[in-house]
Length: 74
Image (tube, rainbow, N blue to C red):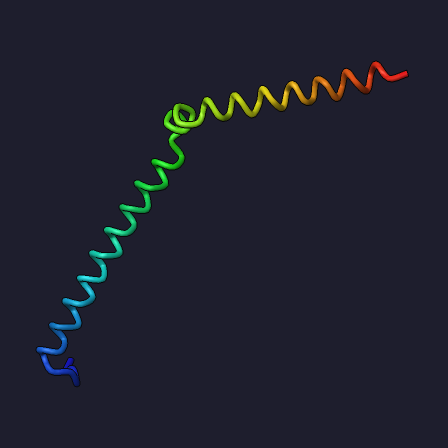
């Protein structure tokens, strides 16, 4: 099969395609690592336990006062 492109141009296109495949592969690996880090439950709990506990405590106190107030009205 004869190609209308010169051999040099074909080699350049093949090299560009290989380079793009390598970049795409590297991006996929980086994305997988980022997703794995973001979805790491142990790390997220460790990083956000204090604020989450504070928010839940305030929510519990608020709901407690609302429910107690609704049940003790005359």
